[in-house]
Length: 299
Image 1 (cartoon, rainbow, N blue to C red):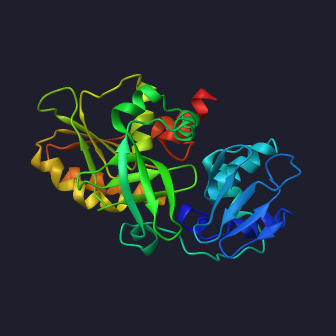
Image 2 (cartoon, helix red, strand yellow; image 1 turned 45 degrees about the vertical axis):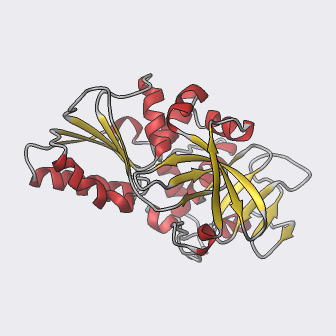
């Protein structure tokens, strides 16, 4: 089974297969006793629309693959990214039942949310989340903002981690939400070296920050392009020529989307000498992405 096939499997179907039934149902969410640990009060929720889970007791969450890895680990079984795909592929009687949920700035759910203000990171909840992902506050303050959002549908205010893009929008993230406020675009960052000959490409800001942690650097010598979505690679490719780079390094995810993006950059560089491409996936081949690698390194 590959990534694209895996994300069409409903987490609720997997839970039922494992013998876990919801203790409470709403139109948006199902609540369960956590399948990952012992508890008496249900604190494990699955959002039906996004097909994502969150365990309030452990503060962890994600999609179908992250759940599979967490469950395998709780059972004392091998739980790498390939292990998760293999396990999902071995389930019998489960058919794809959801469409991948892709959040865009144009979607109704994001339109209803307004950016109210930005500030330095202060929220303990957001800081704790970043630290759980291996990102220290000192580094996060250099690249991220705390953004205050207003949900016009509920009237509630939301605090989220914000990463500014080239169009003035913000990629925003909490433990349970990932989206964009404003126009979707890539983010370009200058390195310490003027007229740098190298550029590093990342799918998301969490992977970029993770690489800085692993390299123990607050800033690279080379320039950086964060795609903020693999679908925005087309925005980044022309910049490789405009900036007269010689060396292109990709740090993309170990899934079908990431592999396709890596191949696209490789082909582009081959067609436009003297560009030289290097895929940096080898050290984290057994993990979903750079951040997943970092989390395992510091565990």
